[in-house]
Structure formats: structure tokens, C-alpha cells
Length: 80
Image (tube, rainbow, N blue to C red):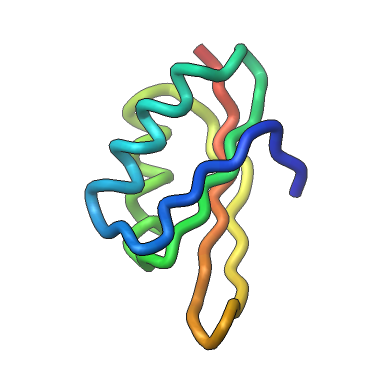
């Protein structure tokens, strides 16, 4: 999936990826997509919940193996 901006939260665990996402999304323009990289499995539940609460749109979630660990890529579209 294509993103306008990337945010690396690798090594951070709940709630830091969400806090960092909240700060970063404020820098984006309406309609831009933020890719959040995380190795915290909690992001699979936390990011959709945060999007529902804030009104931003979760447009995708990918999982991949990187250097023997699971990495999650959450895509969030700024909608307000």
C-alpha cells in the first residue's frame, strides 16, 4: 500500500505507537495516508480502535517478517 508519510515505532509498545501516531497525524494534510511501522502485536487492535475514536480512517494493515521478527504496517488516512 502507498503512504505519503512513514512513522517508525519499532521497539515501542502500547501505548506509545498510538501516542506517536496521534502527534504525527496532526502534521499531515487532509486525505494523506500515514504508514505506521510497529513490532507490537497490540497495534492490530489498538489502531482500529483509535481510528474509530478519532474519526480517521484505517485503510489497511499488513504483516511481514523482517529479520526474524513480525512487523506490522498500519495505514491511516487523515479525514479531519
